[in-house]
Amino acid sequence: MNEHGLSRLLLGLASEDTEPTTMPTPSCLPLPRFRTALLREDWTDAEQRHKAGCDVCRQTEAQARRQVWHPSLLRLFWHARGLVDDADAARHLQTDACRRCQRLSILLQADRLLARLATRVRQRAGDTATRLGRMLASGASALLAPASSGLRAEQPFAFEAAGHSAVLLRTAPPLLRLERPGNAQTPVLLRVLLGDRKDVREQFTVPRPGKEPGGLHADLPLERLPAEPLTLALYEVDAAVLGIEEVSQLCHAFAAARKLDPLAVPAWQTWASHALKLAGLDAAVRPALEALTRPAAGAVR
Image (cartoon, rainbow, N blue to C red; front, top):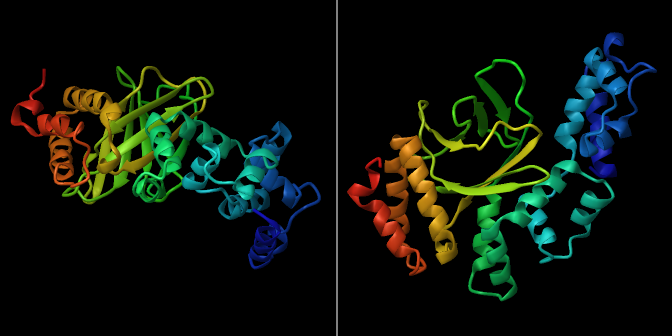
């Protein structure tokens, strides 16, 4: 959030209820501190205790969170791969030291599909840059806190984008259940990136219809319950950008879905059928998708 953003925030606060009980006190945090702490995630224990008992500071934090600026996933990717000289993104990552965007940059750099597409963009191959832009524009992200030590069977997490959500299920193996809006008649392939400071996992999934109309969900197995915060990012994949490098991951993801959630098989097969109609589909990908559409492919093995 630049100086204009701070001005908007001040104006917004000035327009709120100004009863004496809601006015800042001398012990309230200064306004610039909200921005810094939100970006760097470095609230002190004393600040956390104050916010817990201060309606004014909680309201200010909520409004500052809405106003704070972050580069889009596409801009973070362009910058991380050195494809565009983006001074604003560089300042946000380095000077502002935004932890959220630093984590997302690590995920985007680790994604092998995006790395391959970045090479094609440098080579100015076809319309790769346009397709990549549309893919990342569909993205959403969330921070998954460590699993609580209680006996809670389900731990919900909120995405930044409206309509998306995730629930950590304490099953064996642990599952991450994604919920998102979508049309069941036109399933989409999602790329899911999940990582911490040490490791990034990348996989594909095709969400299937959920219990609620207009809602889709997908279950993703985790190797273990998270012991530290995990960053989650996902985006829709244009089948036309898939290559032989992704065939093994696609087949593995379909096999996992078939075993874990057989109801997801029709969604996968419908997606594959639609993808096979694309004129630009890579010839190396076509046999794998044809295999997915066969009736026998849905049999649990």
